[in-house]
Every structure is written in C-alpha cells, then in structure tokens.
Image (spheres, rainbow over the protein chains, first blue to last red):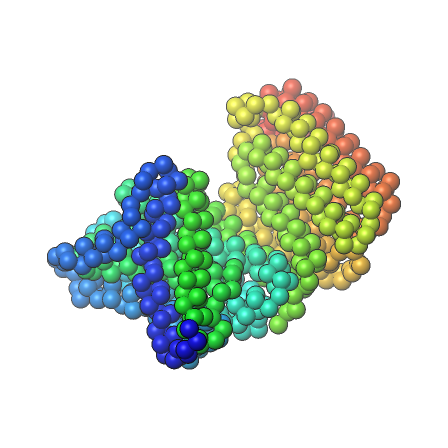
Length: 320
Length: 225
C-alpha cells in the first residue's frame, strides 16, 4: 500500500469523496433520526435511490420562467463542487488548486450557489418559492456577520485566512485546542452550520409545512433532474460545511500527510467517520429541541454572534 | 500570530468565558426558575476554577473555599430562591415570567457593547498576577457590566436579585484572579456578605409581594413620602 498517488488524483479524490459521500451522510442522519424516534427508518442508501429516481423523471418548468431557472441548479452544483478544492478534505498539505481562494473565497462560492438558487426561485413567480428565497436571504444577512467574525478569529489565530493554516495550527499543540477563542469560534460556526443546513432549531428539515420553511421552499417549482441537482446541492453543502467544521476547526486529525495510497484511503475513511459523528450530533439536536418560531431566529443568530464576538475579544486581550 | 496560552491558562480562560456566557444566558432566559439554574451553574464553575487554581498553584486553602462556595452558592442560595418563588404556575401569575423591557436579541446586542467596554477597560489596566491569567479579570469586568444590564432591563424583583448575586460571582472571579492567596478568613467574610444580601433580598421580595400582590416592579412608578 505504499504506492504514491499523483497530486492531481488526490485533488480529484477530494471532490469525489464529497460528491459521492454526501447523499450517504444524509442517509445516515435520516436513519439515526428515525431510530431515535423509535422508527425503523429508511435505508442509509435511500438518498442515492431518490436521486436516481428523480433523474429518470420528466422535468417541467413554470410558464414564463427564463433560462436562468434551468441553469441555476447546474451553477449551484458546480459552485459546491469547487469548494472541496479549496479546503483540506483529505490532506494536511496544500494541494496546487487549494490556494486559488482562501476562506472568504470558499464563502463566496457557497453564497453564489445560494444566490442563484434564490434567484431561480424568484423567477418562477410561485409565492412559496419566493417566500423561501426571501427568508433565506434575510436570515443569511443576519448570520453573515457571525461567519465574518469566525474568519477574523481564524485570521488572528494564524495570521492568514487559509483553511490549511488553521488546521495546522490546531494540530500543533493541545494549548491551541483548549484556547477559548478557538472553542468559541467553533461553537459559533456550528450554530451557523445548523442554520445553513436547515436543521432544528431553525428549520424542520423533513417537514412539509410551508409556513416554517426557509431553504426547503426554494426548490418547490423544480422537478425531475433539476430538482435532483438541487437536492444533491443541499447534500453537498451539508457535507462541505461538516468537513470545514471537522477538518479545519474541531478535529483536523486523520488527514493524509503523505501521498501514499494507504494514507489517502485512511483519510477518506476518517473524513466519512468524522462527518458521520457530526451528523449524529445534529440528529440528536434535531430530536431534542423544538423548532424556533420564525421571529425568534434573530435570538438564535444573536447568540451565535455573541460567541463569535467573544472569540475575537479574547484574542485581542491576549487571553485567547 | 498569537501564541497559545498554555493548557492551565487555557482551561482557566475557558471557565471564565463560560461564566460570562452563562451571564448572557441569564439575561435572555424568560423564566426566573431557569435563571436560578444558570446562576447555580455559574457558581459551580467558579468553584471549579478555584479547584483548578488550587491544584496548579498549590494553594490548599482554595479547596476549602471552593467547597464552602459550592455549598452556599450552588446549594443554599438557589434553594432559598426556589422556595421564595413557589411552583412554576405561581411564577406566571406573579408577573415574573418574561419581564423583559427589551427583546432578547436587542438585549444581547446591547450587552455585547457593554461587555466590550468592560473587557477593554479592565484589559487596559494591565493588572498581572501570578495566580491566574489577566484575561479572566477582563471577563470579570465584562460580567459586572452584563449583570448591571440584567438588573436594569428586568422588571421583577426576583430577576434583579439574581442579577445582584451573579454580580457577586463576577467579583469572586476577579478576587480569585487578583488575590488567590487572600487569607481564607477574608474570603469567607465575602461569602457571608452574599448571605446577608440573600436575606435582604428575600425580605424585599416578600415585602413587595405582600404589598403589590406581584413581584413585578412595573407598577412602582410613584415616589411617596
């Protein structure tokens, strides 16, 4: 198992791990959630079957919808598949394309994907899809400052805003893990991830009640392969955010530090295990809390903001 | 690039930061019962911090102080407060629940500003001590301000009392940072100050409830000679 894997192949593997692992992660979360509720639950592979089924279905577009409506799912998935090139998914060392963009670059790509989906929803003229995109944009404007403060924390900790640098800093000593700035920023990021992936306490992920919907409502008018792409996109987003949380903030261990095939395969297994662990935590939160009323989401965002701001404060005072 | 503060200092800093977060928790909690629970948790943390400092700096008296402080602030004071408040259904009727004058999100934002003021004003004093990190002192400063805001924006006597007690926690944190080697007798005297405050507040709560049939201070709008 000591054959060296060429760098471009590792870079491709990063994308493939995220692309192929994300429906599985969704399946595991769905299964754990059902087990916690005392149900048997769907198969772990169910999301793959769902995507395959949707791809075989006929695609319909609302009359009057422009080309943007059909292009948006492709742009969104392309944006999501570019992010794994920029973040440490499998390796501790930066890959050539990893320096195309920093954390902000990755953030821009995620925002671009969310923007095109929201715009496509507006294009349909359907009230629920428009409601969803309006809400999604409103609340992401509230959580954006939190993300910015998390980035500031990273910048103050490492002197750069490269995800690889923060992962290396966290790995360097136990003191780095326990410092309050790091813990506060990680907690704030976790709260933002719950919001971004449409989980309780912000949004019911599996619900069909339109009044509480935010992200889920945006894809109401898409169907067939286009809807499959949007669904896959939201799975990709979830996997990418979990990867950032695990490989950059919480547990950047188990990544390959060499090009050896064994190390790279181990890194893939480690990443899937870490993402599953976060997924189980998310499923437990999903089952133990109630959904917040829509107007209470600002309180949730203010709590996340508090954590992120305190993280920056502690660094400025030299105690973080 | 900042150097990490070391495991002991990091642990002490995390405990201090958690105490500040619990203070914020008390601020946005609607029910007094839950505020009491958060107060007990905050008091437990300060005992843990005392144990951490005692173990690291080899100060055996601090173990005794931690035990005494836990018995009083985690056990006795929350018990007395719960007895005063009565069952949860009564709390609603007494006008205590949700006595915010500001919505929780705005209150948190206002407190972030106050906490920043506390942080940086105490941080700029540059007080260093061998026992605990200076960061914890700044956190204590921030906690004092947040506790003041808590007392200001709540309109019931019970929440205001809890704000006052958590202010005492902030001061205990500051004294642990600045003077961990203070004689045990003096530290105990501080704790008895708290007991006195509990008795005074208990009397105030009872007197106010007897007169106004409510714990809310919203009706107290006139001065009478």
